Image (cartoon, rainbow, N blue to C red; front, side):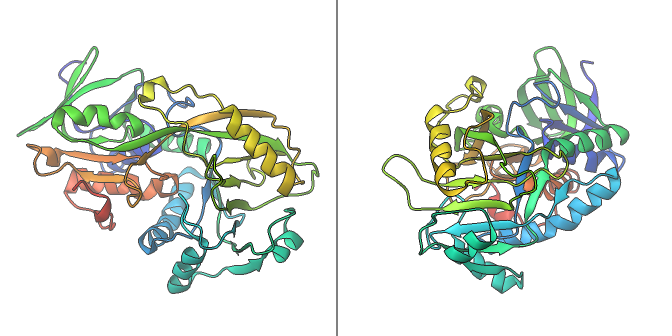
Length: 387
């Protein structure tokens, strides 16, 4: 295998990496994907069964990007003949001007107004009358956005893997990349046992990306942590919930934010995921992630559910954590783009890393392929570029 050449090498077989490879492969390019783990593991940032789908953002460009992503999800579903995105509704409630890692309720509603996206504004009493929440503080308010919902994570991964393979993409697992070296005629990619050449490389390795960029003089500042989540049983088999997020003022010990899902439409299970949105179980080396639930975080989720969501049995059926990585700069959603001009021949490398990006997978895959293969993309992602 040593000395093989490709038009594009993609490092990382997560959803964005596979979406990039499929986009390039179906355009007729020779594409190789290198994945350090086995396929479909729960390592990295694609663990769990679902992700929230929402149109609301405090940042207008992100809300627009989500609207742009929706038809691309439908195109992906048509290619795979399988449903991946379910619009079961999205409920945000709580302190309407609390600044959180998800944004602000009032500000997000203002963005929806400017974009002409509909929603229903609800008081605490109206939320409790419509949904199975109780004992909400009387000043809590929020909105229900009917087009929100959830994405089937594992089906998306399987679909993209199958489409990429059908498009002629080579996918190799157990291939940790140790060096990416661009030069005037291409890029050398080195693993423990092989070396290959490519015209261009896309780095889509999530939390593992900084270690490949540092030798090139590029420092990517990430905040890495393990996000705890758990599964709880719905007491009433005929009940359900939209996806939801509770915005609250921080306590002395944590940020006091909680989120959850309704039933997975694709599974028929009466277990639903819920948990705290705490970013304080920090990791300095992604290879040292434990993937085990933080006991105090589980206890806080159980406490919140026991008080405010009696539709769920507060005894968790199982709990674990997933590795998450966010840019250290809170104003940056993720990193996307070519390397800075200070890196010789850095235009041959395109990077996507970090952030809550699953809802943008079809957009990011197409944008990465566009930028690597044609030098430009029609998606406005410039504010996430390397400075």
